[in-house]
Length: 205
Image 1 (cartoon, one colour):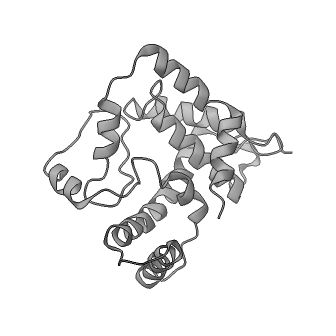
Image 2 (cartoon, one colour):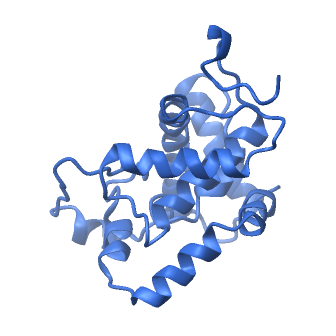
């Protein structure tokens, strides 16, 4: 039945492209939501992510558990990070006159040459690529931040940019204070199904 959860019948979990997109959007929005944040306890953070995912999933789709969501995202993120690091390198050093098509082609070629397989998660990457954790950073910014480290004992942190300055841009954004009313309003806006659908389908090629 469509309403079954991941744990039902001991069957192996399958994920469609739509499922992947929803998970990527849920993770990104919860990470950037100032009322949730990405620096709290891992268990609490993933509780928010899976709740958001299950609330906005197609009602015929399976209800996911936090364990399954976290495990799937870890596997997907590892692959996306590899591609993102290659893409950001080409983005930063791309020759003058390159088109957007050129910029997409060469990272794919390098990924295939390096990892002996095609990059299968562009649909996920297109959702997360503009978030602070993944967006390209200038060489000056990377050099300035390279000597700094960020640690938060017991907190959920995610090194998603495969370039040297992994999460500095994200941490800077999180450190800037936001008024309570503004944070609450932004959080409510990001939790709407309409906003979520826009994020997922605006990323189509």
